[in-house]
Length: 296
Image (cartoon, rainbow, N blue to C red; front, side, top):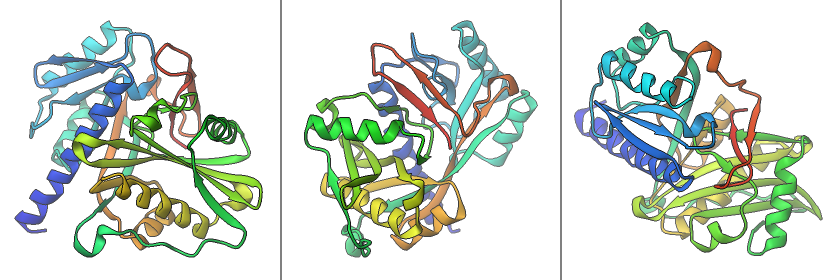
């Protein structure tokens, strides 16, 4: 990879970093700078994705000393030790250093990135399976249906697990342009939901989560829903859209739509603090009810 390509990749990852920083701020987190790290924490909600240590933005390296100071501060706030960062912005030695601090990989998910430019200013539109249609939420009944589908154990959930999901929100987020929710129906049965988080200041969109009825979970259905989410984000003015590439199937579907793998989101935690990758943590608080941290 030549120098210009590396520089471009890092610029894209910085935009993703800024997107997540703003998204977490919207959930009411507090930020403290401790040396060369930021300590992100929520005053009332212990969800892992809202409580972590991360290198300060625009730093190329952070020593173990500063990371440990950040972890100590996080523990003093009553939170489990956890470091979250985007691999691709820091050298491999950074991961080794975290291991030396007795932290272990909790989650490592590839980032699939779509950049709109030239011929890629319009997303592809794959063939929709017979009898299926996708509608975007525009009223409170749509919000209720989205919530019902999301809570049902009959649906498989795919998510990056770094931007919490507020299932109980009303239309405020959509009206503010911060969220796009889609519902997939097959005939009259809701078979899936998809959500895109939008940050206008970075012109970026994050396909936060996708859930499909197990019987309807096919590569084609996933492709149709991802493509619809991508088109909606581009129509909202996003020039960068990213999504998780959890499995090779996920990554292949994303690549077919024009996404490119670029770095990964990594979370390190003490073994006692690690979240079950198929589990759901749910906490009611005044920010959003409930806020979910999902990795499954």
